[in-house]
Image (tube, rainbow, N blue to C red):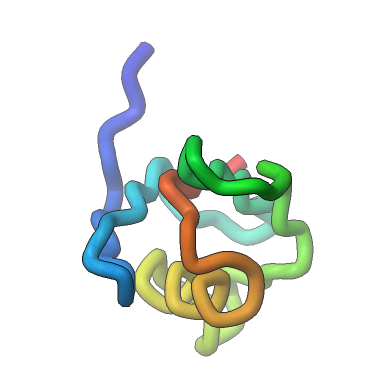
Length: 78
């Protein structure tokens, strides 16, 4: 099964973050960092996709880039 990219976010460093899946109430966001980054991939369970501040992939990418890591390669709704 292949999940198509839902959104491609252009990061401040010029690279991209690929977002997968449809955002639904209750979803968590799975985070995958760039391979060359020291950090931990994980799950963002504190993002409410019904909140107007984080209800689109673009807004979620901006939030995580500013508050978690600027080197996120992929996000998936889980």
